[in-house]
Amino acid sequence: MSAPSKARRIGVPLAALAALLVVWELLVDLGVVPNFLLPTPVQVVAALVEDAPLITGHCVVTLGEAAAGLALGVALGFVFAVLMDRFETFYLAFEPLMTVSQTIPTVAIAPLLVLWLGYGALPKIVLVVLSTFFPITVSLVSGFRSVDPDAIDLMRTMNASRWQIFWYAKLPAAADQFFSGLRISATYAIVGAVIAEWLGGNVGLGVYMTRVRKSFAYDRLFASIIVITALSLGLMKLVELAQRVCMPWKRAEGNYHDR
Amino acid sequence: MTADERKSQAPALEARDLTLSWDGERIVVQGVTVDVAPGEVCCLVGRSGCGKTTILHALAGLTTPMSGHVLLHGEDVTGRPGRVSYMLQKDLLLPSRRIIDNVCLPLVLSGMRRDEARAKAAPLFERFGLAGCELKWPSELSGGMRQRAAFLRTYLMGADVTLLDEPFSALDALTRTDVRRWFVDVAAELGLSALVITHDVDEAVSMASRIYVLAGAPAAGEPSHVAGIVTVDRVASESFELTDEYLAAKREVMALLG
Image (cartoon, rainbow over all chains, first blue to last red; front, side, top):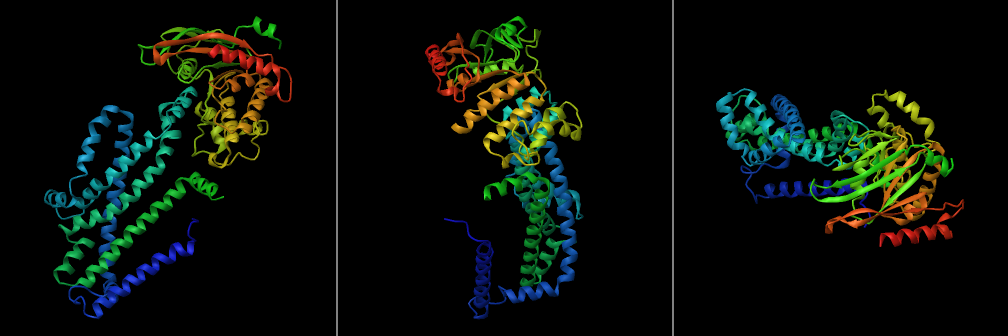
């Protein structure tokens, strides 16, 4: 079977989405689902437009927290991954702990963080760091380990230093997996920030969502869902862009296989 | 250089009475002595699992033998990496570097500036059959080209002794024959001494002037040793692989392998 054309790849999912929206609109318009429980897509868009200035303000805060947390999470994950790759004891010590830490639900820690760190940006950033750090570390560690040991032996016969082996062989070998981890982390970052805001704060999309929920403005709740989705997708696109810039050889591989 | 002239000089590479193990206990290779004269291509042939790669690692200085010595032009280099160059069946080109930067790697690793290293490597691309590939990525080259690039990188390591571990076995049959012949020519032209380690009798006979045959079954507790040395009568022929001399040498090697 040949690969679907670009037009089909874009057209088919768009048509499916459109069909879903039409069904949704009809279900509410025909009274199958009462409107006070479920707003129609048209109402959601109207709410989004109406509240745009307000949402933008909250959006900027959430995005700031997510970006700061993600940057710190990546930095911390990088340091951990390098140490785990370099020192086996460090790997043995932290690998299980990190796995366990991932099973702790975010919603369980967020209230504690708010309790300890207050209602400001700090608990949000900390929560984002906690949820982004793991995918970054894991992807980097397995990336570093994916290097062919023969390649390292070869570089040793060229008298390469440990740092040179890291820079020329390990780091590029980990790039692919790192960006996969980063893509996941980017979505975690937005969701993490929103959850932390939801559970305690004065500003941000999560706060906005609790407010509209309490006032039963479900059209606005849906509007904020659209915004969160758009932010996550935007961040993921940004990561893809960064990957294209950082990994020029990846494009060459793609071209070669297409031929 | 004639065979007699070669014999009068110190060997380029010499392994004296090497005894090696995998884990420090079980002996894999016992009392192996090999020498390669300057400008000579020798082969070490043995079945899979007989400890060929273990020998290669010891000769490259990546491991220290239990006993015995590795000498390079008479100098003891046992357990010291970075003195001989080294090439494997896998080209091990870094996918993230362009071909020119891949072949320049040994120069850059030893501290040369990148543009300087590129300038030094560029004129060699023609001779290595890589003209026009300088700025390509490794993934854009065929297997034969990648092996040539790996050999150019090996050459730029600057050592006059090269160890090759089944260098061309992974290529398809026709490319393999061409690249082997090409390798022997280039090695002669550049005055390289090479030890080719392989399980492939054809690879050995088509490249080497002398073949060390390694026999033994270390996994069954029987350490490998050199069972015999076969001298290949390399007649100048377009298709050496079809001559009686080739077949005679091949028969002799196969008999020693048992």
